[in-house]
Length: 253
Image (tube, rainbow, N blue to C red; front, top):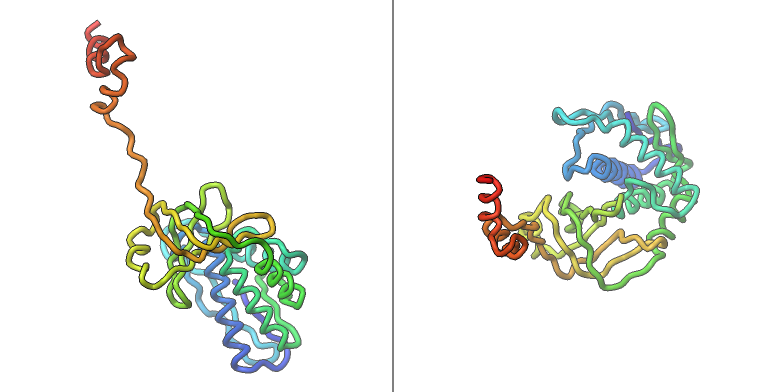
C-alpha cells in the first residue's frame, strides 16, 4: 500500500493536482524499477477520505504472472523523496518526469499545513527543501546539442509526447520529448535500439536526463556474417582453402 495524506484545509485544485502528480510519480518509478513500458502492476484505490487529514491510498495488483516489484517500487518512491529533501541529487529510479512530478507535489504542499507520502513501513514529508532541491537539480547542469543511444521504452502522449530510452551504461532512463509528427515512427520502434539527436540536458554529474529530440534514427541490429561470408573473409587463413573446404578437410581427416 502507498498513500498520500493532506493536513489542513485542501482546495479541490490542490487535491486534484497533487493526486495526479502522485499517481504519475508511482507510474514513473514503477516503469523504471520493472523496466517495462506499461509497468507490471495495477493500482487499486482502497481508501479515500475527505476528513482532515484527507487521505488517498492505493494497493498494488499484479497484472500478470510477472515478478512482483511492489515493495521495491514503494521503497524507491519514499527513499527518493527522502533523499531529495536532503540534497539535490537524482535518486535511483527517478527519471526526469519523476523529478517533475515530485516537484509538482511539493509545489502544492506549500499551500497546505502538511503533505506526506507513506507506506505501511515508512513515510516521507514533502516540504520546501524538496521543492528547492528538485528545482536546483532540474535547473543546473548543461544543455548542448548531442546524441544518445539506447533502448526505446515507455511512450506517453497524455501530457505532451515523450518516450524514454535506456542507455546501456546508465541506471537511469533518459526522457525524450518529440514532435507529434514523429509519433508513428517512434511507435514502430518500441523496444528497439535507437539514436536520438537534439538538445541534451545533463545534470551536475554530467549524466543526460532529458533530450528535446530534433532527429530520430532506428539502429539496425548487428548482423553477423554467415558461413558463406566467412568463407570469403577467412580463405587466406587456411593455406588458400575456403572455410568450408578447411572444415571438410578436417572432417575427412
